[in-house]
Length: 215
Ligand code: DC
Image (cartoon, rainbow, N blue to C red):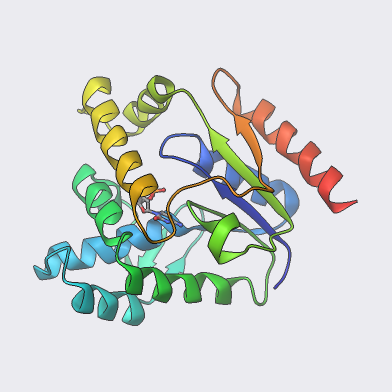
């Protein structure tokens, strides 16, 4: 395992923007594990696989060729699915397939392999608890629920803040309440509340934490 910066937290806490900026500043590879669960959900929805068919979902996850291109591009078996995985339907589906144990086992194996050869900033829900319990730096990003809904609204044209707040609350409850690798803060993770902070302020805080941890 190379250098791993683990960024976990609920939807809309600012994980993606922060993790991407950190990766750039630290010269590490950015990995969005949520995109992997979304890609599995997209394939299941397209293929008419029901989201509780554990065996079929496991097959999709095991066979999935998921790669990350420049910027925030996600490739699934060579197809650029970056936009297709961002719909509310896929977000909700991802949260369902993420509760299926064999799907998690398959995707966690891929995530670990990604850090074999390069240092990474990896964002998700279970990076500091399950994927890399020995991560160099662990951050748990959180923010006020209304602020999280407002941030998602800026990325999701045509959906109201109230509707997004409802969807986020539903997803949070499923992500935190599931039996398999629920969303929890690792005991040794540092919690950073991003409410009211700019991206630069959050990044500066985390860089300070990283420097202290790595000394
Ligand atoms: O971060 P996101 O919204 O793209 O994640 C999509 C879903 O995948 C979310 O409901 C939680 C789940 N997920 C997970 O269970 N474990 C991860 N490491 C990343 C995401």
